[in-house]
Length: 203
Image (cartoon, rainbow, N blue to C red; front, side, top):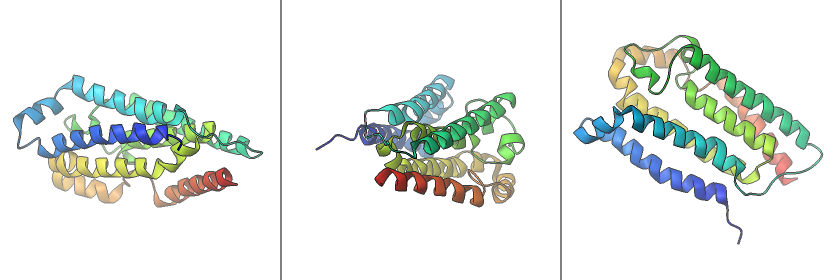
């Protein structure tokens, strides 16, 4: 039986992620947890680990690679998605926002945060999907829906126990005006690309 390295890596990260989410949820009850979350070194380590695992280790781990006449189309789509993800990061950089951007004194609703409530996570997903397309990483593609679910749950926990709790009514208005990651029609295009890649992969 073949070992699915992307799934093993994701499973390891999943348990680490669960611990982090537990710390976020319980931070108001346990002083140590709040102290941990307020530590900039801890936040930087978490962000770097997340990026390394999601954007590097999973797409580039040993796995089945797709080949065929239409792979060049996937390669092109992958490059476009990676570029979009990087451009979004650059946009955030010029806003001078780093780790925990929404905890900097006021609610950010302009620039990248006027397009997506969680633009950093959006960049992660765009780059991940782009690298998967570009490399033709079949197993990394299969677990992509799980990664999306993890990002959605993470965003919802942040909104309930962190950002939403801090800004309350102001955030409720913002949440109604700006999508979590992207507009619904963009999400449909994103899903179409995913399905296209999957169909090409199994043919």
